[in-house]
Image (tube, rainbow, N blue to C red; front, side):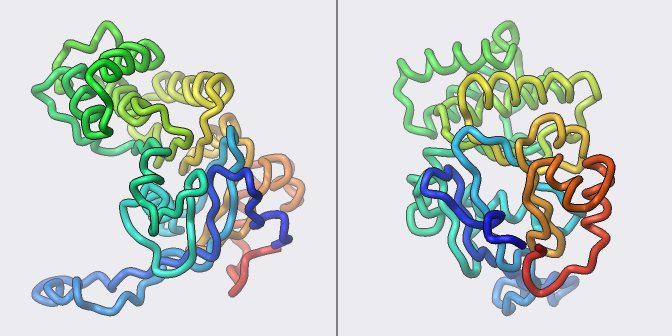
Length: 277
């Protein structure tokens, strides 16, 4: 891979350098008791390096097991890397995790961890307090964020009555309450119907990235979604970066007529010990 693909620039909101992550091997039965003390030998990331500029939208694509969620969880300070470095707005995620967390919002397409019998407003208030916002700021931020997410009329409903699409919007509202500079999304439109997914993509690209200048890094299996939202695309396979370019640049690199075919072609190439050129 050419040097411009993996070089981090001083203004990068997300900077990743030679990141590696190993996990203990999965075990079953009584052997699972040994997993916490087993030597980490299962490789999830193998020397990943890249940078995301302020206000840029970057997508991570790759097959299951490529390392997409592991990479996002490291950047969200949920797990630590085995080797290498990663930083959010110049805050190292391992040495300064609290400072890094203040700069990020993290949202997944899975279970949101809300309290179903509480209202949306009460849930948002609880998580805002966890981010050390004052009572006055909590009230103001909930009102502003709910309006942006289109959930103002539903703030006083119990979350257990929400549709999947509404719960996704509430999850994104929670991630944005403390006005993060960087937004990390892991398959954000998973389980959404096509109409809700389209609305969600427009919200992210038009409102958060273009209007507010939020830096976005997201993982997705939906290539049409990636092409619609992303400025650049990071292609991962077996924990390695095999390409990092614009959708058009990837098509040119692969000699393919369109982005989707380019990704398929790149993923079918053998993965070598270093990153691809």
